[in-house]
Structures are given as C-alpha cells and as structure tokens.
Image (cartoon, rainbow, N blue to C red; front, side):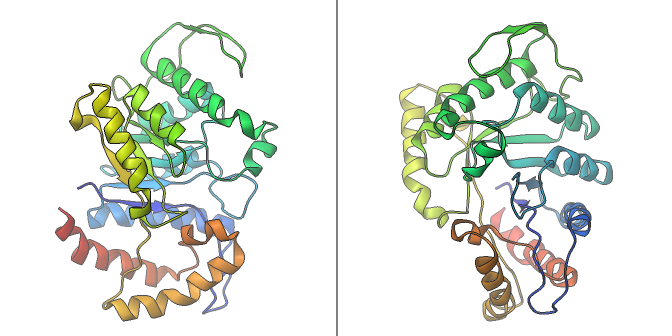
Length: 295
C-alpha cells in the first residue's frame, strides 16, 4: 500500500495556545512537514488547491517545487488541481517544470472541486464545469504526450502546432488521477480515459464512497481494460497519539475550531492549527506504529 501525507493549506489560529499562524509561516510549515514525511518513510505528499477562501494553497506547483528542492525520493502530488477552472496549457507547463525539478516525481490528481465560488472567481458558469473538465483533461494529456499539438475546443483559444516546454521527465507523462467525491460523471470520465480514481475525504467517511468505487470497477471491466489499472486512492484524515483517547482529547479543540471557522462541508478537511511539536509527534507515531501495518 502506498501511503502519503495530505495538506489542504488551512491556516487556523491555535485554539489552545491562542497563537496565530500567518500564511507565510503556514507555507513554510507545509514544506517542512513534507521534508519530515520523507525522512519518516512516507511515500508521497499531496497538496490541495483552493481560491478566494480561508486556505492558503492557491499555487500548489510553487510549493511542490520548494518541496522538491529539499527532498529526493518522496512523490509530489495534488488533490486536486482544479483543472475545470484552469488553462490546461499553463497546467501542463507548471507541473512539467516541477517534474523536471524533482527528476520525475510528480503525480497530478485533477477535478472540478467542491466550491461553486471558484467558478465565480474565474468568471465561469458552474453548469459548464463538467464539459470544461473533460475538454481540459483531454487537452492536458495531449500536451504532455505529443509535440506540435493543434487543437480547437469550446472553452479556450485554438492551438496551432504548440509544444509544451519543458517536457515532463516521466514518459509519456506524470500519472494523472481523476478526483471524484460525488459525481458519477467524473467516475465515467476516468474509465473512458483509462485513468485511476482519487476519492476525497471532505464530504463523508471513505466507506460512503463505495458506490462510486463499485461503479468505477464495474465500468472498467465492461470496457475490457486491464483490472490492474483500476487503481483507487482514498484520503483519510488521521490524528495520532500514544493512545486513542489521548488522540481524541488532543485533537478535539482543533476539530471544533475548524468546524466553527469554515463552511460545514469543509470541516472534516481541516488539519491546520496544530502546534508544530504536536504535529511532528503525530507524524512520527504514525510512521513508526501504523505504516508498518499497512505494508
């Protein structure tokens, strides 16, 4: 089993100590946490992306590049890159650059996100999100796999013999996961393109996504694809202490603070606000006590 560390870039005040964390401090802490995760044996680190909200990770390729410069082995991923809203040409260039800096360690999980406000910020219609996502994903794969790409679609200007530089280190391109938490449309798109599926953890317990996983695997089999390619990733938020009771007691004030500070549908996402020492202890315990049992 492949086990990674996820951060969504939340930036909360510490409800116990009463201290505040600036966005600058939070960015540096995310990089430090990734370096620690590599030293403890985690396989990967994954960063979220949000815009015009309380989280600070609006430019994950920049942060991943900083992590790449301080690590040598750990995989560098996104959960999720908001491909429905972004220009696929720029996404191709940004993450190919990170792939070059990291010597081929990038993994991209792409999706439509869960905040309708993102479409408003980008001047897009929410009801076009599914079509934008499919079109942008198909173009992204071509830009990474081909040179001299000529293309015409509905949502961006045509391309005439465009070659993305730098080229990704990984061939034919970095792994691409399709993120889906509630929509069978994204599940079906993953099957159509032969891509792995990434589940979120924001909306429900992982077991509640079982119908989506069953649909994905059933349609994958009907399409005649290799069963080994039907990979599924799941994000679960975990707080670790010496005992389960200590974990509940130490995490409770932060869970309450996160639920009060964000919209309800985001409350389960939040991992920020923990004191640095407490976070490092939790990561160390997870690496020493849990990771060996997962592998």
